[in-house]
Image 1 (cartoon, rainbow, N blue to C red):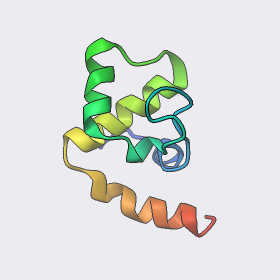
Image 2: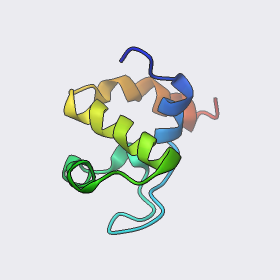
Image 3: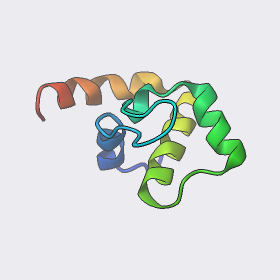
Length: 78
C-alpha cells in the first residue's frame, strides 16, 4: 500500500469506532460488511473517514496480514 502512513496503520489498530452498531470496536476489527455499507452510503468526514477508508481498502485487497506486526507492537506498547 504505497503512500500509506505507518502512523495511520497504527491508529486503525488502536482507535475505536465512536458510534453505531459497532461502537467501541477497534477500527481494524470492523467487519467488511460494515465498511462496505460506509463505502456505499458515504464515509464520515475528516480523520475517522480516512481511517475507515484505509481499513476498507486493506480488507478489500486481502491485506489484513499487514496489520499483524503493527497490532503486536501496539500490544507491547511500541
